Amino acid sequence: MRNAAQFDVVVAGAGLPGLALAIAAARSGLAVALADAAPICAPEYDPATYDLRVYATSPGSAGFLRAIGAWQALPRERVTAIEAMHIEGDAGAALDFSAYDLGERALAWIVEERALRAALVECAHSAGVAAFGGSPFVGLSFSATAAELTLGGSEAAAAASVGVVLSARLLVGADGLRSWVRRAAGITPEPRAYGQTGVVANFACERAHHGVARQWFRADGSVLAWLPLPGRRISIVWSAPDGLAADLMALAPDAFALRVAEAGGHALGALTPISGCAGFPLALLRLPSTVAHRLALVGDAAHGVHPLAGQGVNLGFGDALVLAQVLAERGPVADPGAPVLLERYARRRAEPVLAMQGVTDGLARLFGARQPWLAAVRNAGLAAVDRMPFLKRALAQPALR
Ligand SMILES: Cc1cc2nc3c(=O)[nH]c(=O)nc-3n(C[C@H](O)[C@H](O)[C@H](O)COP(=O)(O)OP(=O)(O)OC[C@H]3O[C@@H](n4cnc5c(N)ncnc54)[C@H](O)[C@@H]3O)c2cc1C
Image 1 (cartoon, rainbow, N blue to C red):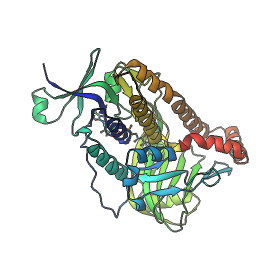
Image 2 (cartoon, rainbow, N blue to C red):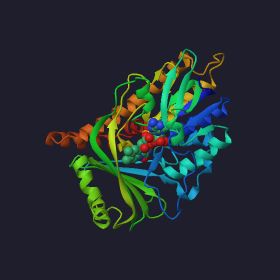
Image 3 (cartoon, helix red, strand yellow):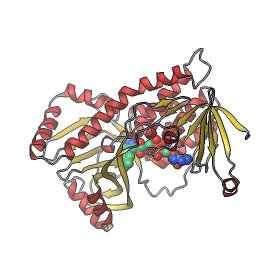
Image 4 (tube, rainbow, N blue to C red):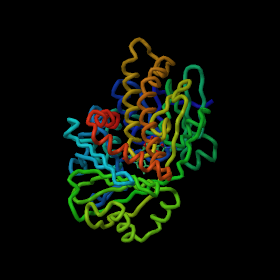
Protein backbone atom coordinates (compact mmCIF):
# COMPACT_ATOMS: atom_id res chain seq x y z
CA MET A 1 0.00 0.00 0.00
CA ARG A 2 1.49 3.34 -1.05
CA ASN A 3 1.33 6.52 1.01
CA ALA A 4 -0.66 9.23 -0.70
CA ALA A 5 -0.13 12.96 -0.19
CA GLN A 6 -3.49 14.40 0.97
CA PHE A 7 -5.11 17.53 -0.49
CA ASP A 8 -8.56 19.10 -0.63
CA VAL A 9 -8.24 19.65 -4.37
CA VAL A 10 -5.86 18.21 -6.97
CA VAL A 11 -5.80 20.04 -10.29
CA ALA A 12 -4.58 17.70 -13.03
CA GLY A 13 -3.17 19.91 -15.81
CA ALA A 14 -1.33 23.21 -15.48
CA GLY A 15 -2.57 24.97 -18.60
CA LEU A 16 -3.79 28.54 -17.99
CA PRO A 17 -7.28 27.60 -16.63
CA GLY A 18 -5.78 24.88 -14.37
CA LEU A 19 -3.22 27.33 -12.97
CA ALA A 20 -5.89 30.00 -12.39
CA LEU A 21 -8.20 27.56 -10.61
CA ALA A 22 -5.39 26.25 -8.38
CA ILE A 23 -4.54 29.82 -7.32
CA ALA A 24 -8.14 30.84 -6.65
CA ALA A 25 -8.88 27.65 -4.66
CA ALA A 26 -5.66 27.98 -2.62
CA ARG A 27 -6.47 31.64 -1.88
CA SER A 28 -9.80 30.51 -0.39
CA GLY A 29 -7.95 28.37 2.16
CA LEU A 30 -8.05 24.94 0.47
CA ALA A 31 -4.98 22.68 0.32
CA VAL A 32 -4.31 22.46 -3.43
CA ALA A 33 -1.91 20.43 -5.57
CA LEU A 34 -1.25 21.07 -9.25
CA ALA A 35 0.28 18.37 -11.48
CA ASP A 36 1.42 18.35 -15.10
CA ALA A 37 3.58 16.28 -17.43
CA ALA A 38 5.51 19.47 -18.27
CA PRO A 39 7.57 21.43 -15.74
CA ILE A 40 5.49 24.02 -13.86
CA CYS A 41 7.78 27.02 -14.13
CA ALA A 42 7.91 30.44 -15.75
CA PRO A 43 9.05 29.98 -19.36
CA GLU A 44 12.30 31.70 -20.31
CA TYR A 45 12.13 33.72 -23.50
CA ASP A 46 13.83 36.39 -25.52
CA PRO A 47 11.78 39.60 -25.00
CA ALA A 48 12.73 40.70 -28.53
CA THR A 49 10.43 37.95 -29.87
CA TYR A 50 6.65 37.47 -29.69
CA ASP A 51 4.94 34.22 -28.69
CA LEU A 52 3.15 32.33 -31.47
CA ARG A 53 0.31 31.60 -29.03
CA VAL A 54 -1.60 34.70 -28.10
CA TYR A 55 -5.01 34.98 -26.47
CA ALA A 56 -7.77 37.51 -26.93
CA THR A 57 -8.51 37.75 -23.20
CA SER A 58 -12.04 39.01 -22.51
CA PRO A 59 -12.75 41.80 -19.98
CA GLY A 60 -14.41 39.16 -17.76
CA SER A 61 -11.29 36.94 -17.83
CA ALA A 62 -9.07 39.97 -17.20
CA GLY A 63 -11.16 40.80 -14.11
CA PHE A 64 -10.75 37.25 -12.78
CA LEU A 65 -7.00 37.30 -13.46
CA ARG A 66 -6.77 40.65 -11.66
CA ALA A 67 -8.62 39.20 -8.65
CA ILE A 68 -6.07 36.39 -8.31
CA GLY A 69 -3.12 38.76 -8.77
CA ALA A 70 -1.94 37.68 -12.24
CA TRP A 71 -3.19 40.51 -14.48
CA GLN A 72 -1.24 43.23 -12.66
CA ALA A 73 1.94 41.09 -12.93
CA LEU A 74 1.85 41.20 -16.77
CA PRO A 75 4.35 43.53 -18.44
CA ARG A 76 2.08 46.42 -19.60
CA GLU A 77 4.01 46.90 -22.82
CA ARG A 78 3.11 43.34 -23.92
CA VAL A 79 -0.68 43.76 -23.51
CA THR A 80 -2.61 45.21 -26.46
CA ALA A 81 -6.19 46.45 -26.27
CA ILE A 82 -8.58 45.45 -29.06
CA GLU A 83 -10.47 48.73 -29.44
CA ALA A 84 -12.54 47.69 -32.43
CA MET A 85 -13.27 44.69 -34.58
CA HIS A 86 -14.00 44.56 -38.31
CA ILE A 87 -15.55 41.36 -39.69
CA GLU A 88 -16.03 40.72 -43.42
CA GLY A 89 -18.13 38.05 -45.07
CA ASP A 90 -17.21 36.29 -48.30
CA ALA A 91 -19.43 38.52 -50.45
CA GLY A 92 -18.36 41.92 -49.17
CA ALA A 93 -20.79 42.37 -46.23
CA ALA A 94 -19.19 43.73 -43.06
CA LEU A 95 -19.89 43.98 -39.36
CA ASP A 96 -18.09 46.35 -37.00
CA PHE A 97 -17.87 46.32 -33.21
CA SER A 98 -16.33 49.10 -31.18
CA ALA A 99 -15.40 49.03 -27.50
CA TYR A 100 -16.51 52.67 -27.22
CA ASP A 101 -20.03 51.87 -28.49
CA LEU A 102 -20.31 48.99 -26.02
CA GLY A 103 -19.12 51.14 -23.12
CA GLU A 104 -15.95 49.09 -22.60
CA ARG A 105 -12.29 50.13 -22.43
CA ALA A 106 -11.45 47.22 -24.77
CA LEU A 107 -13.32 44.40 -26.52
CA ALA A 108 -10.49 42.09 -25.39
CA TRP A 109 -6.80 42.24 -24.55
CA ILE A 110 -4.20 40.40 -26.58
CA VAL A 111 -1.72 38.67 -24.28
CA GLU A 112 1.03 36.20 -25.08
CA GLU A 113 0.65 32.73 -23.55
CA ARG A 114 4.16 32.75 -22.07
CA ALA A 115 3.61 36.11 -20.31
CA LEU A 116 0.33 34.90 -18.80
CA ARG A 117 1.91 31.59 -17.81
CA ALA A 118 4.83 33.34 -16.09
CA ALA A 119 2.45 35.57 -14.11
CA LEU A 120 0.20 32.64 -13.12
CA VAL A 121 3.09 30.36 -12.09
CA GLU A 122 4.44 33.12 -9.83
CA CYS A 123 0.99 33.59 -8.24
CA ALA A 124 0.59 29.79 -7.76
CA HIS A 125 3.87 29.66 -5.85
CA SER A 126 2.96 32.61 -3.63
CA ALA A 127 -0.55 31.17 -2.99
CA GLY A 128 1.06 27.99 -1.59
CA VAL A 129 -0.05 25.61 -4.37
CA ALA A 130 1.99 22.37 -4.20
CA ALA A 131 3.40 21.90 -7.72
CA PHE A 132 4.22 18.50 -9.22
CA GLY A 133 5.74 19.30 -12.62
CA GLY A 134 7.30 16.73 -14.95
CA SER A 135 4.70 14.18 -13.83
CA PRO A 136 2.61 12.41 -16.48
CA PHE A 137 -0.61 10.92 -15.10
CA VAL A 138 -0.43 7.13 -14.98
CA GLY A 139 -3.20 5.97 -12.63
CA LEU A 140 -6.59 7.12 -11.37
CA SER A 141 -8.93 5.52 -8.86
CA PHE A 142 -11.91 6.68 -6.86
CA SER A 143 -13.21 5.65 -3.45
CA ALA A 144 -16.32 6.93 -1.69
CA THR A 145 -14.38 9.77 -0.06
CA ALA A 146 -11.46 10.55 -2.39
CA ALA A 147 -9.88 10.47 -5.83
CA GLU A 148 -6.30 9.20 -6.15
CA LEU A 149 -4.10 10.33 -9.02
CA THR A 150 -0.83 8.49 -9.57
CA LEU A 151 1.98 10.43 -11.20
CA GLY A 152 4.78 8.89 -13.24
CA GLY A 153 8.04 10.69 -13.29
CA SER A 154 11.61 9.57 -13.35
CA GLU A 155 12.53 6.57 -15.50
CA ALA A 156 13.68 4.74 -12.35
CA ALA A 157 10.24 5.22 -10.75
CA ALA A 158 8.53 4.06 -13.93
CA ALA A 159 10.77 0.95 -14.14
CA ALA A 160 9.93 0.04 -10.54
CA SER A 161 6.22 0.71 -11.24
CA VAL A 162 6.02 3.22 -8.41
CA GLY A 163 4.85 6.78 -8.54
CA VAL A 164 3.78 9.69 -6.38
CA VAL A 165 0.11 9.38 -5.39
CA LEU A 166 -1.99 12.49 -4.79
CA SER A 167 -5.24 11.99 -2.91
CA ALA A 168 -7.99 14.62 -2.93
CA ARG A 169 -11.63 15.10 -1.99
CA LEU A 170 -11.98 16.70 -5.43
CA LEU A 171 -9.99 15.98 -8.58
CA VAL A 172 -10.14 18.61 -11.34
CA GLY A 173 -9.37 17.43 -14.87
CA ALA A 174 -7.71 20.43 -16.54
CA ASP A 175 -5.57 18.45 -18.97
CA GLY A 176 -6.76 19.76 -22.31
CA LEU A 177 -8.91 18.64 -25.24
CA ARG A 178 -7.63 15.07 -25.29
CA SER A 179 -7.86 14.79 -21.51
CA TRP A 180 -6.31 11.67 -19.99
CA VAL A 181 -8.34 12.22 -16.81
CA ARG A 182 -11.64 12.40 -18.74
CA ARG A 183 -10.88 9.15 -20.54
CA ALA A 184 -9.66 7.40 -17.36
CA ALA A 185 -12.91 8.42 -15.64
CA GLY A 186 -14.90 6.91 -18.53
CA ILE A 187 -16.50 10.19 -19.67
CA THR A 188 -17.34 10.18 -23.39
CA PRO A 189 -17.52 11.26 -26.21
CA GLU A 190 -14.11 12.22 -27.55
CA PRO A 191 -13.54 15.47 -29.56
CA ARG A 192 -14.82 15.53 -33.15
CA ALA A 193 -12.33 16.93 -35.69
CA TYR A 194 -13.49 19.88 -37.83
CA GLY A 195 -11.08 18.78 -40.56
CA GLN A 196 -9.50 22.20 -40.11
CA THR A 197 -6.18 23.45 -38.75
CA GLY A 198 -5.55 26.79 -37.03
CA VAL A 199 -2.37 28.20 -38.59
CA VAL A 200 -0.74 30.82 -36.37
CA ALA A 201 2.11 33.24 -37.15
CA ASN A 202 3.28 36.76 -36.29
CA PHE A 203 4.09 39.60 -38.70
CA ALA A 204 5.38 43.16 -38.68
CA CYS A 205 3.05 45.40 -40.70
CA GLU A 206 3.71 48.46 -42.81
CA ARG A 207 0.80 50.49 -41.40
CA ALA A 208 -0.44 50.97 -37.79
CA HIS A 209 -3.32 48.69 -36.76
CA HIS A 210 -4.80 51.22 -34.29
CA GLY A 211 -5.97 48.41 -32.00
CA VAL A 212 -8.36 47.02 -34.64
CA ALA A 213 -8.78 43.24 -34.91
CA ARG A 214 -9.86 42.03 -38.34
CA GLN A 215 -11.53 38.84 -39.46
CA TRP A 216 -12.46 37.50 -42.88
CA PHE A 217 -14.87 34.65 -43.55
CA ARG A 218 -13.52 33.50 -46.89
CA ALA A 219 -15.15 31.80 -49.87
CA ASP A 220 -12.68 28.88 -49.59
CA GLY A 221 -14.26 27.96 -46.23
CA SER A 222 -11.41 29.35 -44.15
CA VAL A 223 -11.53 32.11 -41.50
CA LEU A 224 -8.59 34.49 -41.21
CA ALA A 225 -8.11 36.63 -38.07
CA TRP A 226 -5.56 39.42 -37.57
CA LEU A 227 -5.00 40.36 -33.94
CA PRO A 228 -3.07 43.47 -32.87
CA LEU A 229 0.26 42.98 -31.10
CA PRO A 230 2.28 45.85 -29.58
CA GLY A 231 3.59 48.40 -32.12
CA ARG A 232 3.22 47.64 -35.82
CA ARG A 233 2.83 43.92 -35.38
CA ILE A 234 0.00 41.42 -35.69
CA SER A 235 -0.62 37.82 -34.81
CA ILE A 236 -2.78 35.78 -37.17
CA VAL A 237 -4.95 32.68 -36.85
CA TRP A 238 -5.95 31.22 -40.21
CA SER A 239 -8.47 28.44 -39.56
CA ALA A 240 -8.36 26.53 -42.81
CA PRO A 241 -9.47 23.15 -44.18
CA ASP A 242 -6.58 20.74 -43.50
CA GLY A 243 -5.41 20.62 -47.15
CA LEU A 244 -5.25 24.41 -47.49
CA ALA A 245 -3.54 24.70 -44.08
CA ALA A 246 -0.85 22.22 -45.17
CA ASP A 247 -0.29 24.24 -48.38
CA LEU A 248 -0.01 27.49 -46.40
CA MET A 249 2.47 26.04 -43.91
CA ALA A 250 4.60 24.65 -46.75
CA LEU A 251 5.12 28.14 -48.25
CA ALA A 252 8.42 29.99 -47.78
CA PRO A 253 8.06 32.72 -45.08
CA ASP A 254 7.92 35.64 -47.55
CA ALA A 255 5.43 33.85 -49.81
CA PHE A 256 3.25 33.06 -46.79
CA ALA A 257 3.40 36.72 -45.67
CA LEU A 258 2.30 37.83 -49.14
CA ARG A 259 -0.55 35.31 -49.09
CA VAL A 260 -1.74 36.55 -45.68
CA ALA A 261 -1.51 40.20 -46.80
CA GLU A 262 -3.47 39.45 -49.99
CA ALA A 263 -6.13 37.50 -48.10
CA GLY A 264 -6.60 40.57 -45.88
CA GLY A 265 -6.82 42.96 -48.84
CA HIS A 266 -3.48 44.54 -47.83
CA ALA A 267 -5.39 46.31 -45.04
CA LEU A 268 -2.13 47.04 -43.18
CA GLY A 269 0.18 47.29 -46.21
CA ALA A 270 3.04 44.83 -46.62
CA LEU A 271 3.59 42.14 -43.99
CA THR A 272 7.01 40.87 -42.91
CA PRO A 273 7.37 37.55 -41.04
CA ILE A 274 8.70 37.87 -37.49
CA SER A 275 8.11 34.23 -36.50
CA GLY A 276 7.71 30.81 -37.98
CA CYS A 277 4.22 29.35 -38.19
CA ALA A 278 2.51 26.49 -36.35
CA GLY A 279 -0.69 24.53 -36.90
CA PHE A 280 -3.25 23.36 -34.33
CA PRO A 281 -5.90 20.77 -35.32
CA LEU A 282 -9.39 22.09 -34.50
CA ALA A 283 -12.10 19.99 -32.87
CA LEU A 284 -15.51 20.31 -31.26
CA LEU A 285 -16.12 18.67 -27.90
CA ARG A 286 -19.57 18.61 -26.32
CA LEU A 287 -20.02 16.53 -23.18
CA PRO A 288 -23.32 15.54 -21.62
CA SER A 289 -21.81 16.30 -18.21
CA THR A 290 -18.60 17.90 -16.99
CA VAL A 291 -18.77 16.39 -13.49
CA ALA A 292 -18.72 12.86 -12.08
CA HIS A 293 -18.06 11.27 -8.69
CA ARG A 294 -15.26 13.35 -7.06
CA LEU A 295 -14.40 14.88 -10.44
CA ALA A 296 -14.94 18.18 -12.24
CA LEU A 297 -13.60 19.04 -15.69
CA VAL A 298 -12.46 22.57 -16.64
CA GLY A 299 -11.00 24.20 -19.76
CA ASP A 300 -10.61 22.27 -23.00
CA ALA A 301 -11.05 18.99 -21.08
CA ALA A 302 -14.67 20.11 -20.58
CA HIS A 303 -15.39 21.70 -23.99
CA GLY A 304 -13.75 22.22 -27.36
CA VAL A 305 -14.75 25.27 -29.39
CA HIS A 306 -13.74 26.59 -32.80
CA PRO A 307 -11.19 29.42 -32.31
CA LEU A 308 -12.99 31.81 -34.69
CA ALA A 309 -14.36 33.78 -31.72
CA GLY A 310 -11.10 33.47 -29.72
CA GLN A 311 -13.04 32.17 -26.73
CA GLY A 312 -11.47 28.82 -25.74
CA VAL A 313 -9.27 30.01 -22.92
CA ASN A 314 -11.92 32.52 -21.82
CA LEU A 315 -14.40 29.69 -21.34
CA GLY A 316 -11.70 27.88 -19.34
CA PHE A 317 -11.15 30.93 -17.12
CA GLY A 318 -14.94 31.12 -16.68
CA ASP A 319 -14.95 27.48 -15.50
CA ALA A 320 -12.10 28.20 -13.08
CA LEU A 321 -13.82 31.31 -11.70
CA VAL A 322 -17.16 29.57 -11.15
CA LEU A 323 -15.68 26.39 -9.65
CA ALA A 324 -13.49 28.45 -7.29
CA GLN A 325 -16.55 30.51 -6.27
CA VAL A 326 -18.66 27.41 -5.65
CA LEU A 327 -15.87 25.96 -3.48
CA ALA A 328 -15.30 29.21 -1.57
CA GLU A 329 -19.02 29.71 -0.94
CA ARG A 330 -19.79 26.15 0.07
CA GLY A 331 -21.01 27.23 3.53
CA PRO A 332 -21.75 24.30 5.83
CA VAL A 333 -20.68 21.74 3.17
CA ALA A 334 -17.17 20.87 4.38
CA ASP A 335 -16.36 18.39 1.60
CA PRO A 336 -15.15 20.20 -1.57
CA GLY A 337 -16.04 17.11 -3.64
CA ALA A 338 -19.65 16.92 -2.41
CA PRO A 339 -22.11 16.13 -5.24
CA VAL A 340 -24.22 19.20 -4.44
CA LEU A 341 -21.24 21.46 -5.19
CA LEU A 342 -20.30 19.64 -8.38
CA GLU A 343 -23.88 19.90 -9.64
CA ARG A 344 -23.93 23.61 -8.77
CA TYR A 345 -20.73 24.11 -10.81
CA ALA A 346 -22.05 22.08 -13.78
CA ARG A 347 -25.38 23.97 -13.78
CA ARG A 348 -23.75 27.40 -13.71
CA ARG A 349 -21.41 26.59 -16.62
CA ALA A 350 -23.86 24.74 -18.88
CA GLU A 351 -25.58 27.78 -20.42
CA PRO A 352 -22.54 29.99 -21.24
CA VAL A 353 -20.60 27.04 -22.69
CA LEU A 354 -23.53 25.83 -24.78
CA ALA A 355 -24.22 29.36 -26.04
CA MET A 356 -20.60 29.93 -27.10
CA GLN A 357 -20.41 26.51 -28.76
CA GLY A 358 -23.66 27.21 -30.59
CA VAL A 359 -22.38 30.52 -31.98
CA THR A 360 -18.88 29.36 -32.95
CA ASP A 361 -19.94 25.99 -34.36
CA GLY A 362 -22.89 27.58 -36.19
CA LEU A 363 -20.68 30.25 -37.78
CA ALA A 364 -17.99 27.68 -38.69
CA ARG A 365 -20.62 25.57 -40.49
CA LEU A 366 -22.49 28.47 -42.06
CA PHE A 367 -19.34 29.98 -43.56
CA GLY A 368 -17.78 26.58 -44.29
CA ALA A 369 -20.71 25.57 -46.54
CA ARG A 370 -20.14 26.14 -50.27
CA GLN A 371 -23.72 26.46 -51.60
CA PRO A 372 -23.98 29.83 -53.46
CA TRP A 373 -27.41 30.67 -51.99
CA LEU A 374 -25.96 30.34 -48.48
CA ALA A 375 -23.30 32.93 -49.32
CA ALA A 376 -26.08 35.43 -50.03
CA VAL A 377 -27.94 34.55 -46.82
CA ARG A 378 -24.92 34.76 -44.50
CA ASN A 379 -23.68 38.02 -45.98
CA ALA A 380 -27.15 39.54 -45.78
CA GLY A 381 -27.21 38.39 -42.14
CA LEU A 382 -23.90 40.12 -41.35
CA ALA A 383 -25.01 43.34 -42.99
CA ALA A 384 -28.37 43.24 -41.17
CA VAL A 385 -26.75 42.71 -37.76
CA ASP A 386 -24.44 45.63 -38.45
CA ARG A 387 -27.47 47.92 -38.82
CA MET A 388 -28.99 46.82 -35.49
CA PRO A 389 -27.09 48.28 -32.50
CA PHE A 390 -29.20 46.40 -29.91
CA LEU A 391 -28.65 43.04 -31.58
CA LYS A 392 -24.94 43.81 -31.93
CA ARG A 393 -24.72 44.60 -28.24
CA ALA A 394 -26.55 41.34 -27.37
CA LEU A 395 -24.25 39.34 -29.65
CA ALA A 396 -21.11 40.89 -28.13
CA GLN A 397 -22.08 40.33 -24.48
CA PRO A 398 -21.05 36.62 -24.18
CA ALA A 399 -17.61 37.41 -25.63
CA LEU A 400 -17.06 40.17 -23.06
CA ARG A 401 -17.67 37.84 -20.07
C1 LIG B 1 -5.10 28.18 -33.16
C2 LIG B 1 -5.76 28.47 -31.86
C3 LIG B 1 -5.94 29.80 -31.44
C4 LIG B 1 -6.58 30.07 -30.22
N1 LIG B 1 -6.79 31.38 -29.87
C5 LIG B 1 -7.47 31.65 -28.71
C6 LIG B 1 -7.77 33.01 -28.33
O1 LIG B 1 -7.42 33.99 -28.98
N2 LIG B 1 -8.48 33.22 -27.18
C7 LIG B 1 -8.91 32.15 -26.42
O2 LIG B 1 -9.60 32.38 -25.41
N3 LIG B 1 -8.62 30.87 -26.75
C8 LIG B 1 -7.92 30.58 -27.87
N4 LIG B 1 -7.65 29.30 -28.21
C9 LIG B 1 -8.05 28.21 -27.30
C10 LIG B 1 -7.05 27.99 -26.20
O3 LIG B 1 -5.76 27.73 -26.74
C11 LIG B 1 -7.46 26.78 -25.35
O4 LIG B 1 -8.83 26.89 -25.04
C12 LIG B 1 -6.67 26.76 -24.03
O5 LIG B 1 -5.29 26.71 -24.28
C13 LIG B 1 -7.07 25.52 -23.22
O6 LIG B 1 -6.33 25.45 -22.02
P1 LIG B 1 -6.33 24.11 -21.18
O7 LIG B 1 -5.46 24.38 -20.00
O8 LIG B 1 -7.71 23.64 -20.95
O9 LIG B 1 -5.62 23.02 -22.11
P2 LIG B 1 -4.10 22.96 -22.52
O10 LIG B 1 -3.55 24.31 -22.81
O11 LIG B 1 -4.03 21.91 -23.59
O12 LIG B 1 -3.33 22.45 -21.19
C14 LIG B 1 -3.45 21.12 -20.74
C15 LIG B 1 -2.32 20.82 -19.78
O13 LIG B 1 -2.45 19.46 -19.33
C16 LIG B 1 -1.21 18.79 -19.42
N5 LIG B 1 -1.47 17.37 -19.71
C17 LIG B 1 -2.20 16.87 -20.74
N6 LIG B 1 -2.22 15.52 -20.68
C18 LIG B 1 -1.48 15.16 -19.60
C19 LIG B 1 -1.13 13.90 -19.01
N7 LIG B 1 -1.55 12.72 -19.54
N8 LIG B 1 -0.35 13.87 -17.91
C20 LIG B 1 0.06 15.06 -17.35
N9 LIG B 1 -0.24 16.29 -17.86
C21 LIG B 1 -1.00 16.33 -18.97
C22 LIG B 1 -0.46 19.48 -20.56
O14 LIG B 1 0.94 19.36 -20.39
C23 LIG B 1 -0.93 20.93 -20.43
O15 LIG B 1 -0.10 21.70 -19.60
C24 LIG B 1 -7.02 29.00 -29.40
C25 LIG B 1 -6.81 27.68 -29.81
C26 LIG B 1 -6.19 27.41 -31.03
C27 LIG B 1 -6.00 25.98 -31.45
